Image: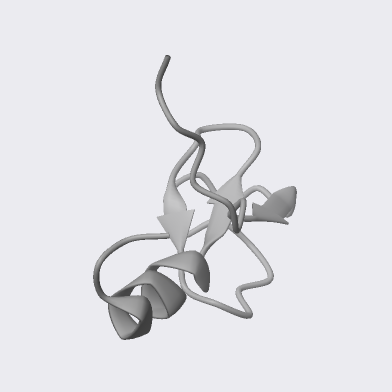
Length: 50
């Protein structure tokens, strides 16, 4: 995780649209940008670059 755990927690509570990759508020039922109902939660772990 990052340097600020509170900020990391807030950034992780986001839903990502599977269709247009837009960020949505936590608990959203459809995408704010394209209206698609296909959302997934943001991955919790930050993957390190190689």
